[in-house]
Length: 370
Image (cartoon, rainbow, N blue to C red; front, side):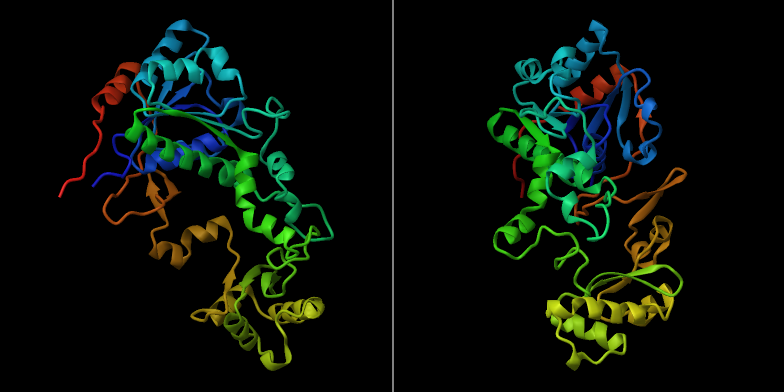
């Protein structure tokens, strides 16, 4: 059976950051998406993984400085369930594609807007990137060792965690509501807001005295000897996540340490215990330790490179990566037992082709069938 979003039609305004990944996920799950590219597209930024991140969508080049192309974009909006855009506030309005215009033509449209700072507030018009948004969200300052600068956690936290994941959530929630009510909505996805939600547990712990503002001083930030990475004899690393007491006991036993003499949550001994464990891991290679702890609940895993992850037996057994064309790509997630999405390659299409697909997929409200 096709993906669970079959029949959902989405217009994607070409962008970088959260919008492409959110659209990829929605396309993987079966949505019909056209990405409206301006002439030249995102060429100025180079190929930012677009061979994979842009998969599954039709590509249509429109010059929004031309009234005829704006009219074509609006004609697609007339038949769409959702529109995704990631420009600064006001840009879509200046193009003649703002939410008031689009919703007046298509009242059930879900108009999803993704920015760093949000559509309102003193920073709304200010430039920024992932690292800036997570800096003001408190997340960046909580990551890293105490003796150095906070390290950028790739762009996973802001662009993808606080942006793309909340963009997908907002679109799906909006489409569900529109099917029930016939009324669409404008979804304001700010990465600072999304990261703030991701930080919920830490915000709570901080106010309850269970989390320090100091980096490298807490349970989950590398201070705990049972939740951190260690360097091995070959210069590579293992990750240890033995938080629960029974897992911690297996970690100690696997390292040849005497569990009875070690109190797991005695913070005054954490530095000494970290040094002791580090000394043990330094005696053997990463892969030796991975084999040694395989099949146990000590929560010890090798820290893999991207290349190694592509060929790891656990990932291969799950078919976590699949080959599409010449590229090995992350498989569709999440997985459904009944509705199976399909990875589709991106391809250019003409306006009549796109319009035909959008209009032929007009959907009546779904009803339950026995």
